[in-house]
Length: 136
Image (tube, rainbow, N blue to C red):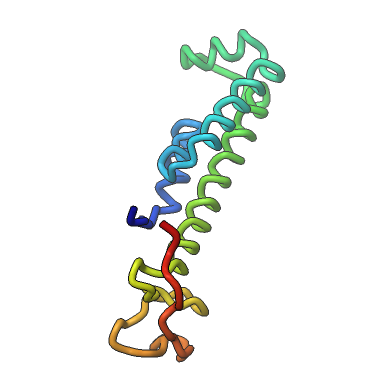
């Protein structure tokens, strides 16, 4: 089975996570993490936010921002987590060799390589083909 790695946009993961808690994690295909953030938001809203405040928030009535602050904190942490995970996922994808064993990005600086050169034209690091084949 061929392994493909797609680059995800960290800003889009953060934006989706800001719209709905956990959606940024769904975008980067971290299903359990998305479910964990949804459960955390639900738990915080049940434990730390008054039921009448949640009802007022659902009907778009005036709500004291401090009353829903715990929910906003969980949402902000979810957004930051989705952004950082998308960046890390992209960094790993850049350093993973293609199925034929060649690198598409420099393992030293992370910039895209020119396939015709045996060195990175950005940082001048010498690049050889990675030995071995990827796991199937």
